Image 1: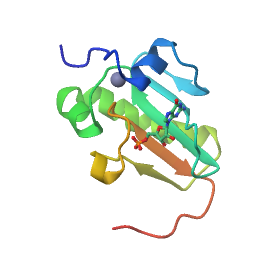
Image 2 (image 1 turned 135 degrees about the vertical axis):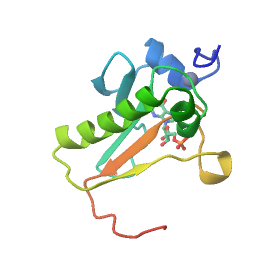
Image 3 (image 1 turned 30 degrees about the horizontal axis):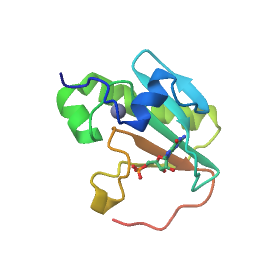
Length: 117
Ligand code: 5GP
Ligand code: ZN
């Protein structure tokens, strides 16, 4: 069934507590934890408990959870006292996605004025 845990998925294992993570926020549907290889002073990943391969597929199937993901991303930055931050959804290997469980990167705490778009 869509959204079911996948046995070979690292982030499903983090949701299940089988792999440790430094959790900063947790709701019934969303988990936020620090990236193991931070690219900025603030680098947190916000993921749904349910498994979808990317954020757009999550939003198409479960829009309320996708909305909560964004709200939690903002709450992470607020909790850390970071006003200016970047949200990144890598989608597809060619765009740098390495873990195929929907997630948003929350990056901040340093100037990030260079734009890719
Ligand atoms: P992606 O490249 O798929 O957009 O992002 C995956 C992110 O997961 C990377 O930034 C990587 O550093 C992070 N990551 C990979 N393995 C682990 C892990 O075991 N624990 C944590 N906390 N982050 C991880
Ligand atoms: Zn998963």
